[in-house]
Image (cartoon, rainbow, N blue to C red; front, side, top):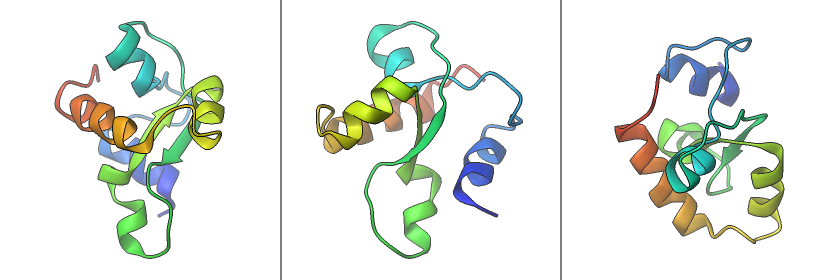
Length: 88
């Protein structure tokens, strides 16, 4: 199972379903569709694809994460909040 399938399976949603951008949902409290599943911490190994390291982001926020305009430690905190209070 690849990391995208792992993310979608965790929330019991399908690739064709609306997927929330976690940053927009938790920080801005708006529903924005995510186009990317982002690895919060990069690296190799099985832990890299754990649900705790995978978060859904819109294209814009995904670009910000890779350009370091969104701090990975902040993203991790946002992701943990989303895991506890997700809208699915």
